[in-house]
Image (cartoon, rainbow over all chains, first blue to last red; front, side, top):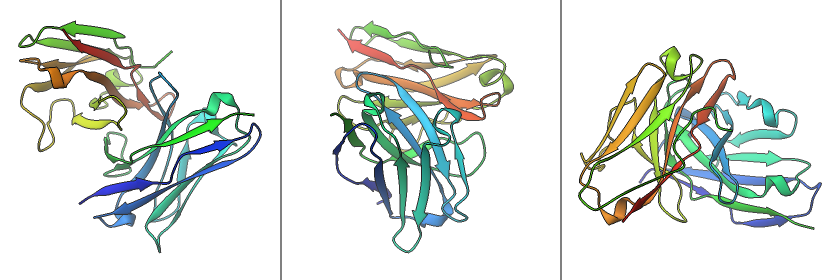
Length: 121
Length: 111
């Protein structure tokens, strides 16, 4: 079935970088855009950016510009999201989600199961 | 402060009908961008509930319906059931931010 499987939870120290992976199965990885969304504990959903797995082209939310990098490895159908210089404010569950196209009216389905990243000294 | 505004919480008795509002502005919903809705059960990832303002993915009961007018949208749940207790989020696109945006979420409690 169509699904996205993410890497496991992790703990990082302030100032470190974190890299989360998202492996696609059940569909052609390069036919769909991959978005990243995060959710801080007890908070709502926050869009971080997207990548076109076919071209590698990216579009990041202004808040994360300069600190986030989204990449992909088409040989293994996997997308990656790396966030640098993390602080306690980056403690959150990070989700990847598939979008049907590059248009502005897209919805997200399915979603990965989420990866909890905890930033703690 | 979310770009799309939802009531933080709502409650209803089993069998009742509830509606969750999502208010935007001229740079998102008011610009004609579609609104989509997600259901997030406790401890799980969000799941698509309504896409393109009023369309249900396969498997979503017809008790769930969506609508959009002007700068706002609404998710209605008829015949409320215990398993509908969850957080609900609206989502659209904002062209002044050049970003996809979410509402702050509404926690629905079934009494």
